[in-house]
Image 1: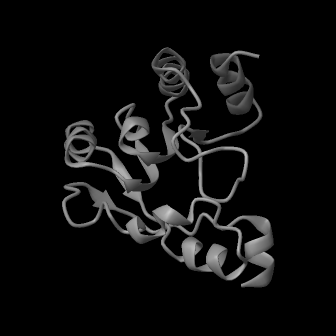
Image 2: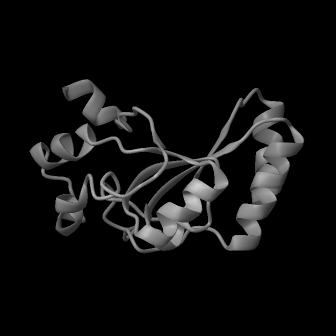
Image 3: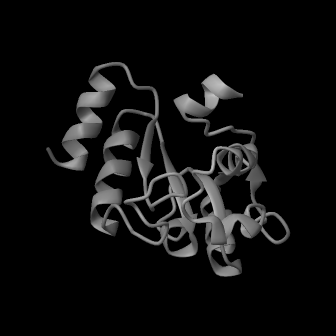
Length: 145
C-alpha cells in the first residue's frame, strides 16, 4: 500500500491527524536514528492527502535531515541544527521534545542510541519555534512509570 493510500484509509477509519516516522529512533535496536523512513516525494504525498482531508501530519524526527522534510509538528527534534530550526520556523512547525522518555528508557536500559542522550534538549537553545508538551511513552514504559 502506498503511503498516500494508507493516509486515505486511516482518515476514512477516523484518524484526525497522521503521524509518520521520518527517522529512526532511540528505542528500537534495528532502526538506527540516522535512517530516513520516507522519500521527500512520499512525504509530500502524505501531506497532500492529509491537507485534502483538512488535517495535518506530525513527524517522528530526530535528525536535521529528517526535520528538513518539515511537516506540521516535529516529534523529538533532538538533533536539529540551526538551518533545520530556521526551516521549521519558516513553515510554522511546532516541536514536541518528549524529554521524560529518555530518562525512562535509560532506566530500563533500552536506550539503543545512548550516544545521543546528551542532545536530548539540543533543539531548545536556538529553535525559534513553538515547543509543545509530549511524552512519547510506549506501552512498556507507560506500565512501569
